Structure formats: C-alpha cells, structure tokens
Length: 365
Image (tube, rainbow, N blue to C red; front, side, top):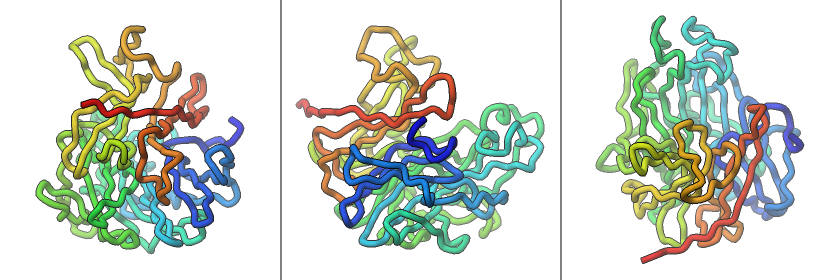
C-alpha cells in the first residue's frame, strides 16, 4: 500500500535479485502491463523505481505476435548485459467464448509463451529483438478458442509454456531453467520441463529436454503451420508449477522450491512451501516440507497439529535468497538463506506484501 508505483504494481512472482556492477541490488518482483523494479545499496534500503518503468507490455491483441502482457520473470546479468526471460500472456479479447468480464488477465482464455528481452543500462529499461526473433518457447499449437459450451471456459482455458524459473549456470557452462507446461487447452494435463542454452543473447539457442538430451528446439507453430513437438516432462516433479531454482552450496544440490500440497493420508492434505533436490536438474528427489502455509487450496489441513503455519494469511511465490551469496545473480545459496514469499492480504486482491523470514538448513544422515 505504500511502496507501489500504481495500483497494479504488486508482487506477482517469486522474488529475484541481481547485483549490478557497482554493487547496487535490483529486485525483480513486479506485474504487467507496466513492470517496475526496486533498487538499493543493500537488502534493507530497497526503493521502488517508478520513473521510468523497466518494461511496458506491448499489449498486442494477436496470439502470433508473442507480445501481449509481459512480465520480466528471470534475469541473468553477464557484464553489461542483463538477459531476461519474459512470461508472456495472450488473453483472447475477441472470441465470444473468452469475453467473460474484462479482456485482461482475468479473461479465462490464456495462451502463454516465454520470450526474451535485454537491458544494457543496468536494468533501467529492457528491449526485445524484432519479432519473432524474441521468442524462446512458443506454445506448441496455434491458438484456438474454446467452442461454445466447453465446460473448461468456466475455469481457465490454458495452454503454453509458463513461469520460467530463475537461470542458473551449470559446471558445463550451460545456463539452465525450468518451466511449467500446459500442452493443450481444456485438457487437465500439465508438468514441468527443463531447458538450457550456452548463449543467453540468442533466444533461439534454448533447447528443451526431450527425454534423452537437450535436443528439442521449441519451434513456432505459426511458422511450421501445424503443432510442434513438446518437451519431455520431468516426472519426479509431477504436476507442480515452476517456482524458484538455486544451487545450495551447503547441501551440494540444486534446489527447486514451490507452493504445493501433499496428501499424508486420504483425509489430510498438508499445504505450504516444499523443496526438491537434484544433482543434474533432470532427476529430482521426493518433495520435503519447507514451511506449512495457506496456499489458497480449500482442501488444505489447517488443524493445530503438525508443523506450525508460516503466516496467518494466504501466501505464494516462494524464493530462496541468501544475503551472503556473492554471486552476481544469487544462484548459490548456503545454509542460512532467507525465504521470501508473497502475502496476499485479505479483503482486497491488489493488497500484497513481499515478506522474508530466515531459514537454517541442516543435513541429517
């Protein structure tokens, strides 16, 4: 309520930090269509940078443009270049089966892609290559709105690639990210995929995991004229959505953090923030509870038994940020990082706060 640049400026993703060359910290945790960042000399002096915004969505009303509502979702700085993966949402404002209320992201028809932008002025502004060269991961099929009477229109009619995690650099000098995938509208199938590149400045260089290697170039169905192959789901991550990715130097594994729920018996769903571990970003451990929390699922157990609940209100968008991490892109957390998350204050959906609490990990043999 006090730090926003405008009413729609709110935390809407896992928090990401990047360190500028002069040591200034830049926080990426904004919203579309006008995306703002916060800047400061340290974690306790961050101020919202309102003029100018870092990115203003093109807000084109055509699915094949891949320039619709645009969130700066993951940023990796190399020298003077700040490479960004953009979460891009198209909401069909024309099809009669999609025009439910306002033709903004409240619209149930949701066609998503991942695109690219770059900044060369320390993240004060981001620009995209000329379309379609900015596209990293287009939805695998051309957009087709739902037919009248399709029951899925009363929920969400969703497809495409969503919410890339932050980018981490592996020991092989490739840059890796995970992403959520909904292969086809109206079908309740979803999963997570991995992708990598060795050239962040080239959006077309990303390759997705195809089950045997990072061989799949995510082609544009508007260019091929038909549906294109889909990446291979990472089965050990199940139906989770992509969250936050880091390498934990204390545990010695990559760590994926997300809000989720786990059934401990047929009647008890324990909800909150969970984490999984991996040595190769493909094979992941069973999830472990990081913090019990309200995540907006009415089936969640809220009894006083069990681990304490993190926050009295609904929460989302967990991130692991180690204030002692000396890497430019905060990709190597240690034993005592912070858990950052978004609190959704009751009463008004725009009233959200970014919250942090300290963590301590302990490895048990």
